Image 1 (tube, rainbow, N blue to C red):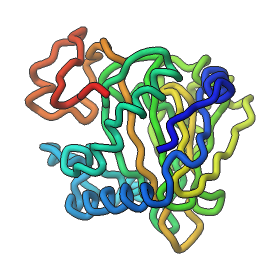
Image 2: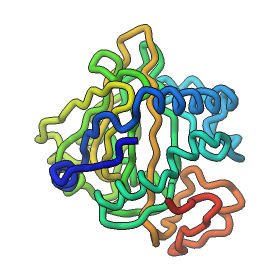
Image 3: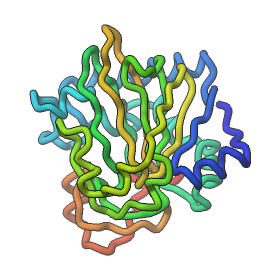
Image 4: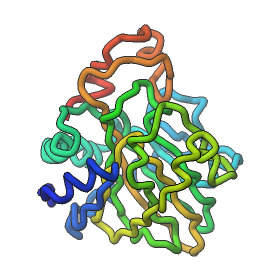
Length: 261
């Protein structure tokens, strides 16, 4: 793993809310992680979450045709766990946001052939905690191109965002009804080759185009929660047992569900 971030990359991330990092994984590591990811995905069938969330399964809604989404692969695959909980990755995150992190959840995001575009959205408002310092890594395991739905970011939008959001629906621009000022920002496309990655803040507006090709766009992502974050009342992907034990304001410090890096 290439875990060295330059001062320019850190400055770019803090200014824009995202940064591209080339050659995060070498070809052997890409193949190893891709194998682990696909084994975990295939073992889950139609279930979206590897744990006790029978309500989260693939259906026929628009969202289900945006991407094949499988979450918490780290709990069922040791290879995925070793990458997503890497201490070296933790050091990268700390250098970007100047705080220590716990895992929130990982997710494979596979944009299937001719898959729908991913509408502009913010990540953190979906989650069970609010933070201006949450961060996600997005790792390309196949080429991510303009043709098959690479990531797009809105530079500086993390400084404009609140915790209001819009869903990932058929209207690509719904988020800009919530934040009209973001519609005035020129978005940036971030194509990647296998092994490249990006980091983005949980309040940075982002989306992806449709997959206009016959191939799959395979990516592995993971969201990270700053140490000391507190429960905001939203369930998100929390399992029944943990969710029912929480009261708004409780610190999310369960080492089983949200391990430290």
